[in-house]
Image (cartoon, rainbow, N blue to C red; front, side):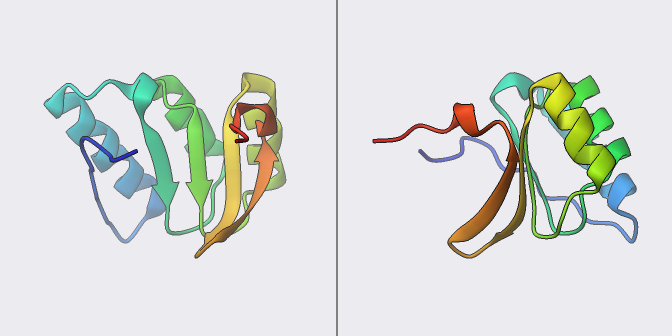
Length: 101
């Protein structure tokens, strides 16, 4: 599957970068239901909450998510991956969302 639209934003703060990406997606009228959020840092509770409010349910980060982030993602039925590096990752919630061929 090839992404139809990629939005890449950076900022000194992770939360600001996420806000910029969501804002750009809104500007482009990108449907959040088909979106995937990938962070180059740690996934916090607040970032999971922001993604959920935007309607993004699939999340990944190169670092570990916080315990509260995992708990919230689990409660909200979100797909959350941590340590996504190269060809490996750890799935914290939403394993049932994976397709096995």
